[in-house]
Length: 162
Image: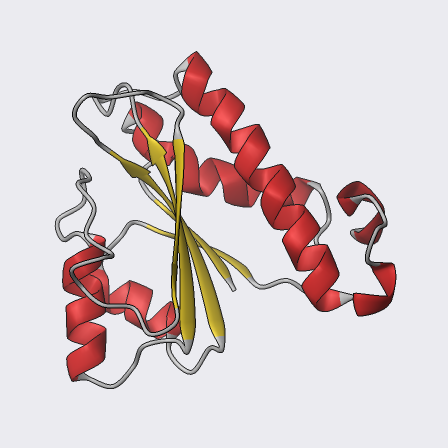
């Protein structure tokens, strides 16, 4: 399952949904793709009972390097390592902590955090974040293609979707 977390009406905060749209456009057959506004209970419902949950979300860092991609792999996610700063009501760390208490974590979680330049009101991604969408979507498409079709390893990701 790939979950794009964010709000497309808060500029770069829409990076997660933009990656999901890109993957849908690529025709990733067999992959479960979802969008979420980041609300903790909604996230938990999406990832519970999953062997793997991949999340894509805008993050803020200081100093900022807009478009820089962070990849965190957590076998059993801990709230400390999954903490992000975002424009959502709760952050990823809080959702992970709640899921841990409810015993509803996925077996494994991968988080792609893309550093944002602008999370103000409006639509459209900054140029650096738009480039990152392409990079994250390409990486995820290749990984999903390999996971969904082991016999297609080595085949370009755009070929396995349809």
